[in-house]
Length: 162
Image (tube, helix red, strand yellow):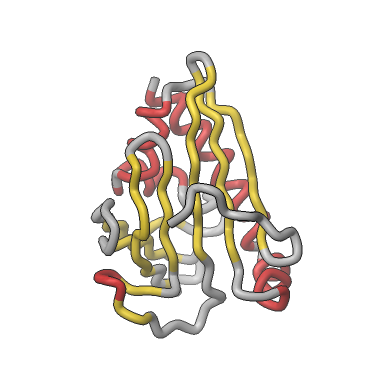
């Protein structure tokens, strides 16, 4: 997968943060299930009920969500790229082992990049969508807002790890 993906504002969105911690800690928080459970879901919206990660191309990306009403929402995908402390790419379009996915949700490919800046890390989360309709559905569903909240929680969690 190319490191240079062109972001199309009609199809995609990106959220950037500076985290005053080394990329090593950000990577840990992104790739270890025990850390992911602490920040991945906006706390007011639900919680992570199950997390499983095999951080390698073809490996499982699973973060199931328990909503306050008791409903369980599965979130299963496949890692496409994993370059420690630099880049992590996964998609809901494929299941682990690159098996074609079957789903009812809006598919995305997520790209996370990390760049060391001084003693901190420039973190960028990008969500790629199939088309404008999917992007609009995701925005209407609260996905963008929830992602911003989750990234803020990630920053807080990483800072607590220091």
